[in-house]
Structure formats: structure tokens, C-alpha cells
Length: 255
Image (cartoon, rainbow, N blue to C red):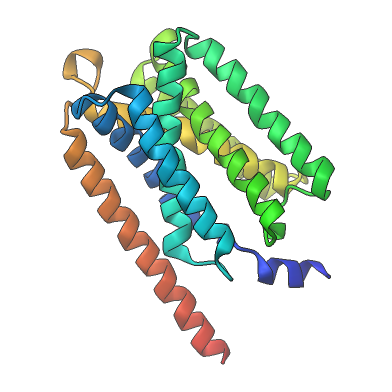
């Protein structure tokens, strides 16, 4: 099967500017939504992680069972991964006492291991090859590790490293610009750059989410977590709808 055939069968969306905008919104929502359940609702990190994990596993199973790429299901799974990543990282970092740096190192190791085993098993970690249950399993496992890592890394950069939410956002935003530059002007593997960008969008979303809902005394805007989550969700829905409409128009023109 050639590359074009594999890409056509892919169960994940095309990597466009719209994809990255929705991804950043989803990772920001993961932070505000995760904090809303664990803190504002008072359920705690462990119970919230259990609830979000059930939702994530159910979404992954539905995604694997789907016969093709379905945008609403895909982005629901992404949101589930980023909310469980938020509460799982907070549980490990705070409740278990691993700390932000320890949690970041541990999760980075798990992420790299997942990518390594995926490549050794299937020969590629290119998202265009995600078209079989086995490749989807590795894809979503890797995503969960990256989403969890992003929360720990964002917290470490903003809090432990003392950069604050604004400083941390500039750091991760700057790193993303370097990835874009490498994509446009170098011959670095696009697969490598995709995963670098995918990983970096999570801590960016984490610190932006914290900036929105943390108290003013801690450098945040003190917005309601429920309000911030609802607004972010509405923006994501609009983004998905626009992408779906554009894809339908393109398909009609091709027909």
C-alpha cells in the first residue's frame, strides 16, 4: 500500500493550521475543565482522574471502532485525553509528592518509550499511518502521555522555575515558533516536528488555562473555571464545525 493510500485511510485529521488552533484550545480546556472537577467541584485529583479515565477509554474504544475519521469523535477523544492528563499529572505531582520536575521526567520517559515501542512494532510513528487498531492504540497511548507530561511541565515552568504563567507561555510559544521555522526552512523529519509541536502545545495550553482561572494574587485572571471551560468548548465546537464544512465543500467540488 503506497503513502497516498495509507493517508486516505488515516483515522486522524489532516495537520493544518485549523488542527493546531483546535488542539491548543482543547489543551487549554483540559486544564480549566480538569481543575473545575478536581478543585471547584471538590472531587479531588484521584476521583476526577478515575472519571476522566473512564471517559477517555470509552472514547478511544469508539474511535478505534469507527470505520473512518469522524471529527466530533476524534476531538472528543482529544479533550478526554487532556482532561485526564491534567488531573493525573496533578495527582502524581501533588498527592503522591513526586513534584513537578520528577513528574515531568517520569512522563517524558514514558512518552519516549511509547514512541520507541510504536516505531519498533509498526515501523513508523507518522500520523498518516494511523489506520489500524494497533496503530491507533499506540497513537492514543502516546497522546495521553504527552497530555499528562504537558501539565507537569507547564506547572514546573510557571511555578518551580518561577517564570509565571506569562513567562511560561512565551517560552512554549517561542519553542513552537522554532518548530514552525524548522518545518518551513529545514529538512528535519516532519514526523519528528509534528510530535514536538504536539507535545509543546500541551504545556502552552496548561499555562494559559492556569492564567485564566488562577487568583490574581498568583498571577492569574481569576475567571470562573466553569465559564472559561464553557467558552473554550464553544470555540472548539465552532472550529470543528468550520473544518467539517470546509471538508464537505472540498469533497463536493471534487465530485
